[in-house]
Amino acid sequence: MTIKELQTPAILIRSAAMYNNLKQYQQECDANKKQLWPMLKTHKSTVIADIQQNIGATGFLCGTLDECETLCAHGVENLMYAYPVAGAVSCDRAVKLAQKCNFYARIDSIEGARQLNTAAGMAGTTVKYTIILDCGLHRFGMAAEKILPFAQEMKQFDNLEFTGISTHCGHVYGEPDADKVPEYAQQEIEAVHKAVEDLKGAGFDVKMVTSGATPTFKYTVADEYINVYHPGNYIFNDRIQIANRTVTEEECSLVVYATVVSNPREGLLICDAGAKCLGLDQGAHGNSAVAGHGSVIGHPELLVTSLSEEVGKIQVTGTTDVKIGDRIMIIPNHSCSSANLTDYYILVNEDETVEQVIRVDIRGNSTTKGI
Ligand SMILES: Cc1ncc(COP(=O)(O)O)c(C=O)c1O
Image (cartoon, rainbow, N blue to C red; front, top):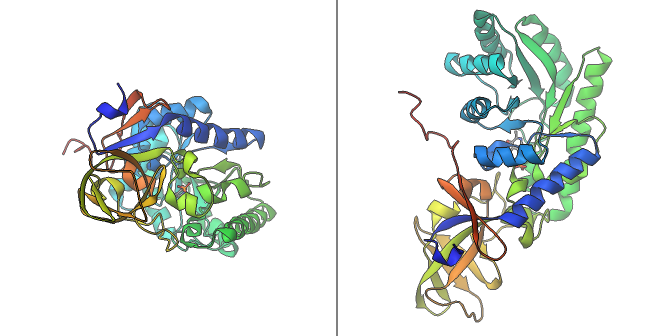
């Protein structure tokens, strides 16, 4: 079957680009003797998790407890949940994960720790954790100088085992000037160094030093302290990664495949992919450097400028040979969002044949969980 026979809109993954991306990051980790624990939330698929493990991934960082539980049931050994847990239901789930696999929670408050500690104590078990270091994103965690006093306070919890620190340089996505990306990586490294040196100086055994974001990966992968990297978007890339000059168009593996369905006036085409395929966001943390909602591969004269739910307006600058009925491949602004808007990906070869249909089987609220 070739892609010409597919219905549109469809979410395609260009197989060669995806495998190249996966191998490149794995090779960088291997060459620097680091572990790669890809962030699963980008693709939310056990099939792709298997591919990443076969290429060499050691574990996974998960964006939801659903992802952790599904991968655990799938037989994955090493799992970390990216965000703090709180409340009896979530703490209980984290404790069960800790009983079934090599699971790590992340902690950034004494109250959250108390709740998790209570749940672990009731189950008669221990949960391993890292402390969340804020290297500039100002979402979770604490600044480097607060890590040591916090780690000391955490010693009160008998059912929680300190293993290290975790950070994520997500604020790099808000930077419109691509030349500044290395400065964000430097911030990430400096925060990690301060926290690790303080902890080691006070006698803490810092086993896990985890960090990672696709744009800063190449500047931080050789760092002496970070030993686990968890980029997520690198498998697909997108227009945000093009804008911050992490990749070129060829390295964007996820594309939205659409048909041009109307040409209502000169300079305007309309395709059958809208916000429910392309997503409306401008990347993980917003970025004014990215204009519109998608670029069209091979057609620099076309830009997706606005989206209705199921259709997209494409502005034509100058002339184009694209006409009603033609198929186009659109690179979305934020591939993680497009990936979360489909039940399956279609893996395609360079000769445009379909290689495999891949289910997106770990999306949020996709099962009732026995309610
Ligand atoms: C805590 C954390 N770590 C890692 C990642 C992966 O970052 P990226 O997709 O930029 O590689 C994310 C993405 O949101 C994240 O929230």
